[in-house]
Length: 165
Length: 165
DNA sequence: CAGATCTCAGCTATACTGAAATGC
DNA sequence: CGCATTTCAGTATAGCTGAGATCT
Image (cartoon, rainbow over all chains, first blue to last red; front, side, top):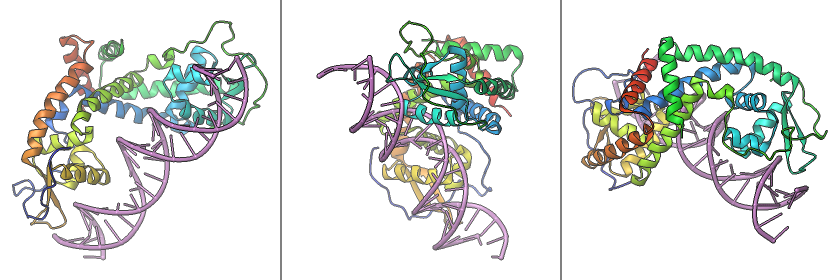
């Protein structure tokens, strides 16, 4: 922050004209053109859609990530799970407690390294994940709604390339 | 959440094989293919880059949004500013207090509707914004690094279309 | 001993809600 | 009166930090 506080109580007009205000959602040109801003807006919308699709099942986005990793990549210690998904050890601890309470995962001490918990999907977790897959697919379709099939593929390709390194 | 808590203390192995663990960052296939997930990852990276570019100037992303709106769209009441940028009235209040303390904006009572504050850029705010523009441009370039010029334009077009409605 | 793992307490940023005070 | 605006207090979540207990 630079500079110094200004005065406060001189009077002036809003907008400088007589027209009523424009309460509409209208982002400024400086933001509308920024790729980072557009990406952020799109991500926000996508996360709302996905969260809304998972909520009826009592699952949050990070719960789904954990279940997906266990199904796709197999059981793991909590530390390794956290590294795979870039979820903090502390947050992961809370997520796993919730999933365990729901019977979707099991945590058991690793008999070969007793510092570790081995986290694995249960049968119920596997079945739940299969049902969630359908919800996730519907959410993707809703998210990509305005784009043609070709545009969807191109967007996916560009995002992959953007994240490549 | 469904089901019931499982047992905890039966022993088992991690990974099922003898190899050392894979501490690498390796998202599961179920996530890697999801447009919403890719968009979220890209947005996260973009926001980090932009935040890092603005931080040396003591400015956060939302500060920049406010300054940008005032410059591009003119002075406004706090309520209208909030609607333009989709920033909550409460958060906007805190942001404006910080910007005012830095001398970048001024808040004065609207003499035609004394409930309102008219928020406007100061000369210092305008000068600061011009310096921030350069930082923002550098951040966009860093964000889009892996893409060709044509790909950058295509990504921007697709994101605009995605957000269209 | 150093270092990894799991757990717990707490912190920051962001987004949102409820309500009071003031004015239209 | 109803309604809008600003302000303040509080809540929820995600992401992160520090530290203790346990184990390699």
